[in-house]
Image (cartoon, rainbow, N blue to C red; front, side):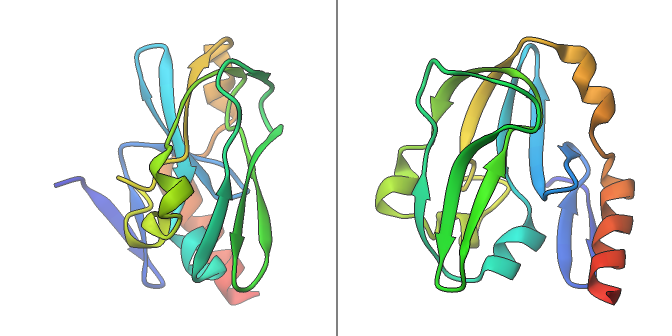
Length: 139
């Protein structure tokens, strides 16, 4: 069981880092698995389509790399770090709502090989991300 923080009914896992645009990354070695947060998937509601990035492309930190569509709207997904896309979650092509069911597990979107590990310092800790969610819910 992963340790987490619950903020306003949204779960934030403590074993990853976050972006201000509601992506998470779980770093393991020189690679990272990326998805969207519980907050993001609940705000989107029923996810109906995911446009995955192409394997092998190089992306920069903050670059739009994927798209998630829901019954409410379409949302860009940004890369938390620079690197090469080395894997994508093909299960999302047939079952995009996996993100709604398990955003921190089976609902991951892509895997990236980090080319500039120093960029990690630009990401948010779980505690700082929790503050961001609190602030967004109050506005």
